[in-house]
Length: 387
Image 1 (cartoon, rainbow, N blue to C red):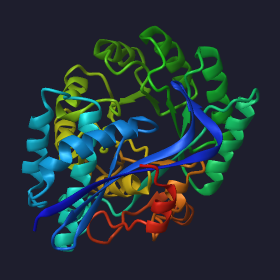
Image 2: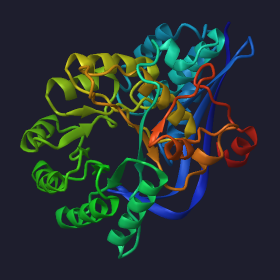
Image 3: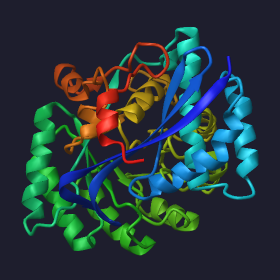
């Protein structure tokens, strides 16, 4: 079997209202998919992390740098291909967009491997360690309105009513406002709900410690990306100052080499590699093994279409218990609950996350079909394709 074509597909549409986070607002949804075709009729689908105009930059890398290196290769040589692509780009980008571009292609190759063997991705990766797992509802994003506390509270209640038993909110508006927003969410969510807050590296270490103390007092479970990802020493300082509040990070780190720094420098309680950015499935599994060697739990970050959600559903199924026990730490699936056509209409057969959550006490199961187990709705793709 040989690779005959590599296609980069950028999808985009305008949102009804802009949503924001600590680094800005956005008014469009973007998904960057890749498709790898073979001479035996099998195709693999992947996704590359990077919204907005970043997707077009990644598309250029795929089309002009990586696709020519893939054409004619055996798609089942997944590990060899990863290292060839990385070595080709090492002198030009060991982090960032080149690695994200490799990530999407690696995901597509694993999809082909699954389809060629008739096995779902979780089986290729060693089998399920759990049949189902918790999904947490991601919402409470910035909006351009004065009554944001009321909006956050209403959204928290809505997510809980959907059946989610854990939820995550955006912060990064300053210590006083963040405390007010977190208090509103905590009161609205009620008892028995696991709460997380994501600052998208908005703070200096001192500010992060101040808001972290407030989050800890409110009973929040983790504080995500409190400071800029380059500041490893700052992460260690924040983590040591906030014992009892889990410090989570990793979505803005790249490959096993970057995540090694977070682990050896004792930066995090929970590691959050983003499979569509950090090197794909091949690299994610190496990061997972390394993290567990340090005794650090892994909860994948995921921000993308249902292609990427499906990939992460497989990854969550194969993460072993750490350290093992009857009442075990359990990884969770991140799921964006804000309106998103790339969740509701992209696939021929939707993943039905909300329906699963509602019917199964907040828990979901991975797809069972070969490979990633999804099929794109080609009419939807054609309608929303911009490049």
